[in-house]
Image 1 (cartoon, rainbow, N blue to C red):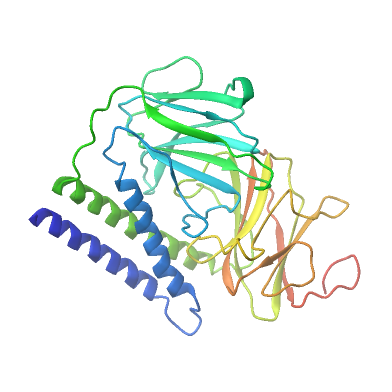
Image 2: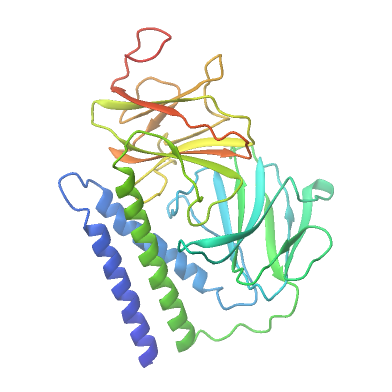
Length: 359
């Protein structure tokens, strides 16, 4: 009991320190950043609590990485993330149905790298998966090579993330799949003092890192607002199949950000807004995200997006949802050409003088 109590106290101290990191933003211009920061800390903790239920189990289970209300790490409104914890010393099989989504992939992550994030070990996307009749598939994950669809588990591999991208959730039929151990893992260990201590230590470290990284990332971006750049490294759990292009926007009440780009040839592209903590803005009741299926392009193929606090009467409006500052993130999926959009701040409401654009 003494060890469990001390582990509990360490976790509470980590949460308190993360809260102080968030509260350091307090000021006349903080707006919702602090309240959303506290919520972000709890979202990170909730994610870790879910993982704790399977961390020591020999029976992995795919659990949602984000939901429409619990969001982390620049979640994409068009993507479902399902996460399973695994061991590099065991063997597993993923069975499922391809569905009709534009993209499906399974990415394995391993030991922590020098930058503090997990290392991608292997990414297997639908271009390299052999599907059976009706889109059925099986993938083996193991330390030793296996025939058919196979993902090698190198020493230190600990997580597999399944990603599926949607262009139209009402039309695209999602992929369905499950993971199972190929050997008998035996009964799960009792959640005892030692297991709670391990969970508390891991959760404390993750909450501390996730909060610090998010605050530092935004602080650095504020020095060069309203300017796009390629986001290299793909974040904590990015996919190598996506080219990420990101911008910190900062707008006064009478300003809008006009973004223009010619989308490259790619499997999928999308753009969405996120708050300071990298959480996508409300996309259930507001227009805060856009993809290739719903966007309107000019006759020459140019995409024009307007980020504004209220509807400018433009077809590709992204609603800041009350956030004068935040992130704009593009994903170009499976492309050889990572396009960097042009952006400029204009008066709002956006005024046109003709087809040439805003004044």
